[in-house]
Image 1 (tube, rainbow, N blue to C red):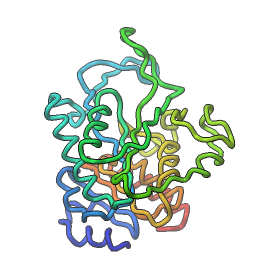
Image 2: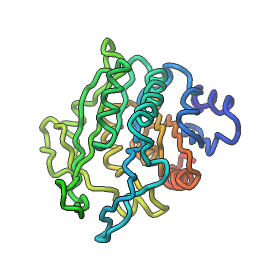
Image 3: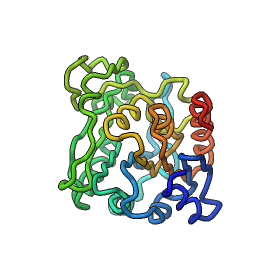
Image 4: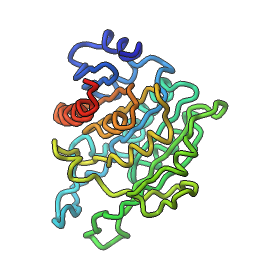
Length: 280
């Protein structure tokens, strides 16, 4: 176990430790309460998929049926001021715990991504890219009052402009991304990525209403982390970031999630990967 993971395991109360492996640590609790426990400048990369605050009692389309858009109370807006205050709180902690060379990824939609982008700049981050994650199999818009929502936005930023960040340029240029019909082999990767929503096998242990595809997280981690880096996900959900980290050999991971149901799904998903690799 890394010094950081051991330090957290020894420091935090037992009820906050959901599962601790040799190099993977799942914490149960509120990110706003647990992030302050992480030592300053100890993490190399953060992937954050915070609440989008889009649960507004409307409807959407899923598997050809009209369903509620509501994901849970955690995704219900408390109003502009409180929503911004929430994002400011965790982004402030993210900056504190990142190493000077560290970077952060934030995923979102129009409901939250512009708030997060503003707050990143307010906190002194340097924006690197905004990625358009295009979903070729996105659901139709049943209201027929706006364009169909077929993408999410990912912001990539580094903590300090003065320090060099890691970017696997050659890998992103030359690796085969078979799921992405927009990527031209041997050409620079551009900022529009075509990646389908999570595959059925990614949900066999259960699913999270905001679950991201493994292919998306694998690409993010391959592009911006190296062997030995410590990755932190403050809103882990069903554990896609942990699964992607295990699949590409990134062995130092901290995930925070408040819902035990999703932590159990994440643990089962990760155990399958680690067992196959004989790392348990």
